[in-house]
Length: 405
Figure 1 (cartoon, helix red, strand yellow):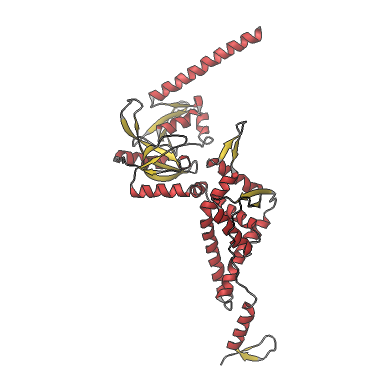
Figure 2 (tube, one colour; figure 1 turned 90 degrees about the vertical axis):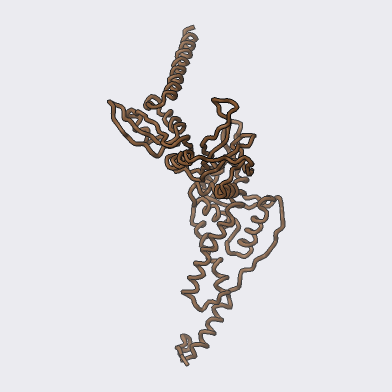
């Protein structure tokens, strides 16, 4: 029989009996968290979530970026915060709970390792409480939580709202429902923008992903289009320069140059601009090997704009100022820009990717960029320049006449 020295009376006591007694004393004060179910719907139910300015600003910007917005009379874009917060609840709550569960399991393993006398019941009771306290203490350390986000219970988010209130407020694993929401918002914002976009449009993202895996042709509405477009989705990728998700594929459409003739074109659709209703098409599109290669190159060079053929590229001459603009203008910037020559003051570059995207990018360079291998584009730019000069002369002459009267 093994004995140990009692720390209280300093006598030798049976080790097994002492551990049993100690185990009872340690665990008797730990009560399991009580889960209550009070799912009562109240259309006026709401929670004030106290947050810092940075968190509120980022949430509002995401709302605008992902289309949860409206225009005021003065043209200002205003986020529709209630709808966007509800979208986070509906699409991120399960994932956030999974993160909480993973944290809880780490706490459980730590408690079992360092406090072996704790029973499983005590470990299960303490773990979620510790996780909640950690998140709550982190939130309390953030200063200037002076903004209020009003989270409203709706018929769409009713069950999630009630679950949050019951699981995390009534069982005291968080100090308040407000702290839980704040923790969820911070966790959501901790993801890259393209992942946040996938979260907000989770149902749409998963549906398109499944159609791609099955090789289906689908019917979609894009932006404000009233009619469905027959579309073969090839790949779902994100654009590094924009941090948005794009679906690249092939559409069946009428040839603008030959009315009545139907052709297929490579195209890139931004995920958030695709309508929520997606149908399976009865008119399948057969993608060609050339189109597949063109789309693969589009993914490599710039997913936001699809090439129509493999090897698509543009030769552009840049002034010294034009070269410096490459480091300033980032939106829709091609990823492959290689200097191939120097002719006098002009640096000559080969730019790979969609001609449409490349031309739109270099339009912003004005006179500091000249496209060399596209006669049609050069003609368009010259016409535009001549129109600007003509308008300038006309307006100037008119203003001078009025001024001199």
